[in-house]
Structure formats: structure tokens, C-alpha cells
Length: 535
Image 1: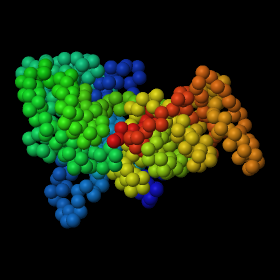
Image 2: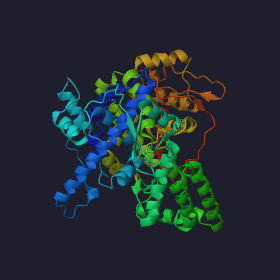
Image 3: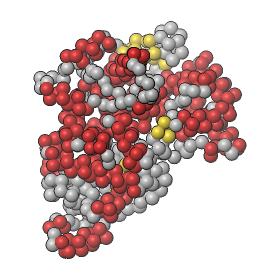
Image 4: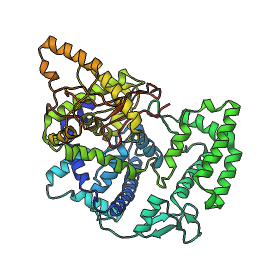
């Protein structure tokens, strides 16, 4: 897949990633959910401070550099100091949604951080050299000077939070418990100056309407969800402009009324009001024959970039962190031997490379990564700019990674992936877990099941190669129209293991994957994937 791929997806980088996940696993406040949310919310605020520091640094650097013919978007940014572990926690989750991360870096930071990659290698080197803690003195000093924040975020910190009023722009001081309610239960906080009642729904709606008004004034700053072409994963101002002209330019009167009402009244600034207005716009466009001219699903993409997110990001980073905890558990607790088993990690890089080739050859099929493949994929995603370059050049598009895909879709896609993998590589797709996890699964299941067609071919091959041991302990069991697959894993240890992401699947399979090549996954919490929302 190219030299850059070989540099960033290696057994060593996978090992560094596992070491990072082990540090993340101890940050979770398992015994106190409210305290856990407080910690994550503070970490998110510190992540925003970190990005602001980098944006300022990059602006100063560009001012003093003579770039000549080198364009800013060609430069891969390298941080000169490292962030605290809690900031890494949030940054890591952000990187695992590559198209959202890319657009956020383009929009939130004026494009200055377009090629910002997660410093996995440097973090691992710092931790390897400093066994006593997660501190690099230079980074600690710079962080504390630039942010006035401590290097270590105290999980027991009970200081107040601040919410910016979307109307009068002052910061309202809020107790930690009220802030958690505000973020999790749409709790209302009164503004101390303008007296407007602030909720998460209203502030996220105001963020969208402010961005919409900004675009309508200058025709340059596009709203979230428009700037990245989901079909290619590339920045496309032409598509953003074309969609914006149809959605907003042809409907200025109705949108001006919406903006005026929301500007004067917080109660009129809600997502129900916005969606009602856009419902009328859609009806009008349909009557004019203009609706089919915009990208399919683009309105939902805009909604999801703002709805209930009162922060300058297109995804809920707190929810993203929590979703990734199941993947971390699988890697650190269920498979603790992987971090020191270079054979497993080496096999994972090979299987990931094969997985990418499979995606390239099946551009309209939704494919699901196994756990070891998902580890390699996540590691690749942390090198965001290189990931975009490599997948674009080698596969033809930037493959998205979406861990919010419903399990019912993943179930169908997993069976398709197994069949496609065996057809191309003549080996089972399933990977193997640690012995502890394997025994847990085996206690729940009486046997491993695979299709008779698959076994017939496998038996024929085994006879020809005198390797009948490959089929040892395979069993077939049908149960109420569902099946469970478990098998060999192309050499990845523990010959009786099962895949951590193996799951019960419905027999009925949807073959409509017109959105494009994707890798929807069993490795992450509910299953991670990519490309399923393109159009």
C-alpha cells in the first residue's frame, strides 16, 4: 500500500497504540458515572484550549516562514510539545471519525490545522523514557504557560463550569452537577445578563443559525456537513457552494424570517423550529425539481453536525469516547497478551492491508473489520493526513470510519465480509481472542456454526492438501434462522479461539450498499464502519 503506509501501520505502532489504550482505560471513573462525565467534559474543554494553542502557533509560524511555492495544505503539521493525557483521550476519539475530524480542522481552525496528526510515536517515546509518569517537562511547562491549566487533570476537580450565552455572549458560571444535567438531560440554565433560558438544544441550534447567517452574508464560510465530499473524502468547495445555493440561496426569505425570530427569542431557536422550516424548503425544492440536484442525505449530514452539540465540532466527542471504551476493553482486558505478541501484531498489519485491498475491489460493498484489523485501522486513522493521502491514492477515496452504524446493518455486512474474504484469500476471516474470552464465549455457545457451502469447499481443500486438522472441532448448528461463525484465523495464535466481534446474524441480508465502499466494524463498541453515509 505504499511506503508511508509501511511507516505508520507496523507492529511497533500497533504496540504503541495498545500502550496508549491501556492508559486511557485507567481514566474511566467506573464507580461514579457523574464524576466520569465531569472529567470528560473538562477534558473536552482542555482539548479546545489545545487546538487554540496549536492554531495560534501555526499562525505565528506562517507569519515568519517563507513558504515560497509550498501550499499550506501540503504541509504535515508536527507539534513541538505534547498535550496532557486527558487531551489525548479526546483527540484520539476525534481522529477515529476521519471525515468529521478533517472538516472540523478545516472549519474550526481556519484550515491551519488541516494536516494535524496525532503524535502517537512521540507519546510512546515519552512514556518509554519516563516510566515514573506521563510528564515531559518541556511540554508541561509550555502547556501550563499557554493555558493556565494544570498538566494533570484532577478527576475529583469540583470547580464550576462556564457556558457561553449564544445571544449576549457572556459566560455563565454553572455548578458541576447542573452542567452535567445541562449536557445529559437538556437542563435549562438562565443567562445572568439577558435572562434567556439556555438549553443544549437551543445553544446547538443557535450555533447552526449563526453559521448559516455567516454564510448568507459572505457566501464563503460554509455550514458544517457541506465542505467534505463523502464520495471521495476530499474537500470540495464547489459541491458545498452548489448545495448551499440551492438550499439557502433559493430560500432566503423563509430563512431570513427564521434567523430574525431566533435572534430575538431563545424559545424560537430550537431544532424543532429549524426542521419545520427546512421541511417547507424541501417541499418547495421538490415542486421546483431542484431537490435532486443536492447531494443525497446532505440535509441529515448538516443536522448531525450541529444537533445537541453546543461545541465547535461536528460530532459529540464525549459520546465518541464512551463508544470507544468497549473496543479498549476488548484490547486491554480481553486480550492482554496482544501488546507483547509481535506475531499477532504483525499478522494484524498484513490482514489490514488485505482488508483495504478487499475494500478497493468491492467499492459498493459494506465490509466489517475484525478486531485485529480494527486495531490496525485505528492506528492508521491517528495519522490523519497520511491516512487521507494513502486511501485516496491507493483506493480512490478516503474511507470513512463510523462507529455509530446500527448493529442490524453490521450483522448483514459481517456475513458479506466473511464470504468476500474467503472468496479472495481462501481462508476464514475470524480472528482469535485471548483464552479467557474464548472460554467465556464457549460457555455461552454449544458450537460454532458456518455455512454448509463454506464447509464443503473447506473439506475439499483440506483433503487435497492433507491438512484435515484445519476442520477439527468445527461443528454446525442451526437455531431459529440464525448462525454463528467461528474458525481459524490465518495463523493468529490460540487455535481454538473465537473472534471478539463475532455475533449472531440474521439470515436475511440486505445487499443495498449504494453509498460506497466502507468498513463497518465489529471491533468498536456498537460496530465501527466507514463510507456508509456517502452519496
